[in-house]
Amino acid sequence: MRRVLIRVAYDGTGFAGYQRQVTERTVQAVLEDALHALHEHPVATIAAGRTDAGVHATGQYVAFDTDRMTIGMREMPAAINSRLPVDVRVMSAREVASAFHPRFDARLRHYRYRLVVGTHTLPHLRAYAWRVREMPDVDRLNADAAAFVGTHDFTTFAARRKDQTSMVRTVRYSHWRRSGEHLEYAIGADGFLWHMVRSIVGTLVERERLQLRGKPPEETIGTLLAMGERRRAGTTAPAWGLFLHDVEYEQ
Amino acid sequence: MRRVLIRVAYDGTGFAGYQRQVTERTVQAVLEDALHALHEHPVATIAAGRTDAGVHATGQYVAFDTDRMTIGMREMPAAINSRLPVDVRVMSAREVASAFHPRFDARLRHYRYRLVVGTHTLPHLRAYAWRVREMPDVDRLNADAAAFVGTHDFTTFAARRKDQTSMVRTVRYSHWRRSGEHLEYAIGADGFLWHMVRSIVGTLVERERLQLRGKPPEETIGTLLAMGERRRAGTTAPAWGLFLHDVEYEQ
Image 1 (spheres, each protein chain N blue to C red):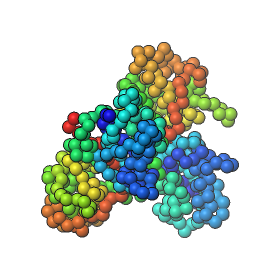
Image 2 (tube, chains in turn blue, orange):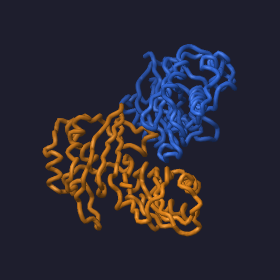
Image 3 (spheres, helix red, strand yellow):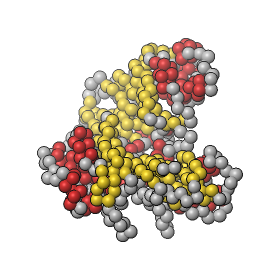
Image 4 (cartoon, rainbow over the protein chains, first blue to last red):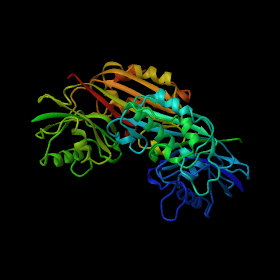
């Protein structure tokens, strides 16, 4: 047996999220079906993380054990892709140690969130960017975004899951970049809480919207983080602007 | 009556092209259905140009005459959009002279073509960029692209239509830009022939592919243009990487 780590990209539009559910179409079910077909027996997988319904990925990582010793790592993506629907693709594959775990061994996770500014939605972006009406001040967005860098309790900026023990995460970078009418938020952290990126983006966009109406926010991001109260944050930005961009591992 | 010019964006994926056909789903039919519903009688439209099946637009322009004098130009997009499917959107509207013609009065048309470099297709880009396996040399692509600027007979780089009289067009700019694994070709001209952008892109990508295999092309782009023989050009790049970006008018 060999443990294989694949980098997986998907268009989240047609999925009820990553994690397998009983009746809904999920990325995990579609992947495991393809692996089942390739191996001619069921194959269990472990992913770097779950993504919600509508969230996309260019760099999700999934591990599984294979007894198909004749398939090389260069051939593996095509072997799986030929059994996958077009909205999921294996981008690359490599062999990892048998104890490797894509969630616990992740060192850094990268997410991207895309905004497009305009009065009406560009159809080809309708499932891949959140449309906001007014162009935000990118310098002000970046001043807010920088406040998330470091080790913080993210209770204010996350939805709580029953199985969640610690709300503390370390953010390595957090910034916005503008290109014409497009804005992209980039964030990297050791881990993310449920709805964390979408809460951050929703809050920053809402603060900026109020600023543009001459209502500067009462609290700084630092104060909001310190409060640890979910209701202090703004709305949760929609799922379809979010991309699990990449995950980094030690080995 | 007032003549209205609307800027229309669409995701070409679900359409058999712009122009109305008897049985297929087309952008024109969907637009005229929405205008019919809004006006409660049939409304004829004239577009800046036709786009093929799968080709997208962020800036197609369509004119029609309206007797709905109470709808302002600021309200017009929303009034039409509420009757359109999500893959077509009216981005803006303005009143134009009654003799205005979106095709004949166009001064400059802008197209964009998107490439993404990689071994496997990123699912969220599968309908919006042409995937090529190897990263081209952008300087070499740009040297080739520059040769299209000016007034030329584009017979080599276009499919002939029965109704086509002149094959001469004037290209104002033609260049490539790279951002990571993404490449975008931008071209502006007084007019375009059928498959012109896709023939140019297909040829440039093919020349570059041969270059990377140590086979520099025998002819320059200037020579190919002068030959005026369609079979001298390379393949036609796929429709789904192409965007009708914008059209400029005098008034």
